[in-house]
Length: 320
Image 1 (cartoon, rainbow, N blue to C red):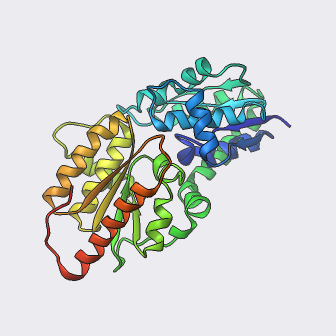
Image 2 (cartoon, one colour):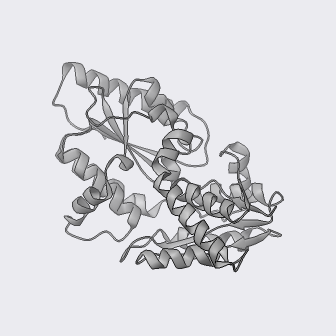
């Protein structure tokens, strides 16, 4: 059976169920790389340009891990996921970066994803299928299966990635903390040093942007004076604005990778909004260092402050 490698990085957490179902329907085995670990990180550092951000280096590590295990490696170029919106330039160029950074790779499948309407998505997914078959009936069936799997994407995250967050509740009486950032920072527990599990162990209600529906976060992001043209940026800003104004969260932890251009803008907007509404916010920036002592100290101090605040004080200044 043909094997297609699927690196566990960048848009893995957004589209893996969709593509896995699609390839399986074409009788192709999907091999995803192992969870991120120190070996993957080191492979990424060794095989990527120094100037790249941490998620890009980690993605290179996942590709390197797969190189001798599969017949193809799948690296889609997600250019635009919504009309008049674009993705990070490094996402657009990731396939070319990998191709020019790592020698002797298996054949790369690199569809260009530019979604302005439903037909664009259909064209993109069919172009991938035609690498393996020209049979339209098989492609039609695989396409329908992929759509069904995509509908289950959020349940897949809760079931496979964060099973301890199955029952997160915006109306909970617990302290509710919004975890902000890109999915590849939020759901990769090596990158974020297991912060979701640590919050869960502290009996904190964990909220993410996935808890705000698309219509709502787009409405809030549309109210900005200047339109955000990054899809992930609209989701991050729209969801945090909605949750703050509706008083659904008690605090915010922003997870960012060192060198992320988008986050350097978005974090400032989040801090301005949280300061205005007196919502504590802490930014955790990750790089290639893997020591947890400093991270744990900041994390525990923030949680202690949140717990103290909920018991004895309801109006203190926002920490920076």
